[in-house]
Length: 487
Image 1 (tube, rainbow, N blue to C red):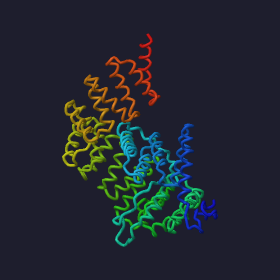
Image 2 (spheres, helix red, strand yellow; image 1 turned 90 degrees about the vertical axis):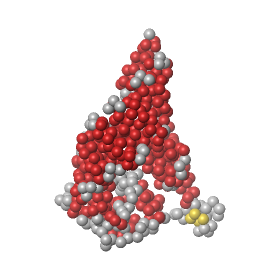
Image 3 (cartoon, rainbow, N blue to C red; image 1 turned 30 degrees about the vertical axis):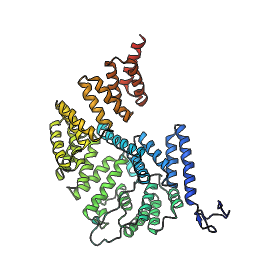
Image 4 (cartoon, rainbow, N blue to C red; image 1 turned 60 degrees about the vertical axis):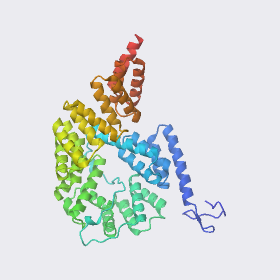
């Protein structure tokens, strides 16, 4: 490529030695735009997987490419990968600030992520043990570095400077984008060689390159990184994971003793690794890691809540209630532990106990939309219907754009045969999130039937069938209505 001004050949970093001008950013932006347009083409061809690959390459080339960040978030949200979606929305917000589009996307995706766990409580599909043994590369997100209190007193280090943080975030993005190997590491170096100023970064990349074929050499490189930059979490995770998946005789404690970490530091490391295992559906391995973490510090709230979440997802509600309650005992003002206990009790039919804990938390923590809606659900099942509606309205005052609150207010009015009011709430729920749940469409249709509006009912059910094509009750109700209409 030549310089647009003097036609001199540019260097490998797109720098003109005669003009003294760098065209790297222009090249990055143009390349990102090209990849973004190709992603749009793939979406039109209904090939979202290929579109995601193009967009991920676009933000590697130009990390501030807003269109790619937002579209990536939307595609991951459509696929139900809400955690990944939020990662891109938050990056977009960091660049552009709180725009209406980004704020709405974060709000909706956060809600969907919570509902996926709380409302659906799908069964855990455990990945077989033999698959775990072949599980070489972790998919890391830019995890926070260790803090000083994670190390024993003799460890002294300077905090990461701004450039080092950016470099490690970019390395994590690459790790989270590609199946690692020589090609990927080379790809990373090719894109970021102008920012990889420390030999520590390159040692880490070498460790990843050798991880599959020469694990002993890889571990040697990774251990070296922990000594040179002790606060970076990623190499520790890879070291523990490599020893652990190989089924070595060493216990986790023996592995951790290789590092000069305090109990707090060891717990943070194990909890981070368990979270990654869980995200890969290695739930039994995640649980083993968390139990080890708990043995180090039995009062660690982070560990107790993580164990509660694992059991909740497996629909072991008695067990999830046990772990959440232990976290709650350590800190009754911790909202996550309170919500965990309340949601577990709800599925154990312990409505009165849930109400007591939530009301106590509201007096300690202060008003919270999530706490009020959980309170409302439990009150309704205790036949305290007026209190339930009052609590739901308080939740609505705190969070007017939460579709779940509108859904429950619609459900309460429907059960009280107040179909006009119920219709308004269900419509608002589906306006905020048209893919909220098939039940919202079904109850809205039932309201319209009660209000003798068959044409609108059919339109609602057709939309429900489009969003939830596998729902049998929508299909049956739609067939019945069309039959009656044509009779």
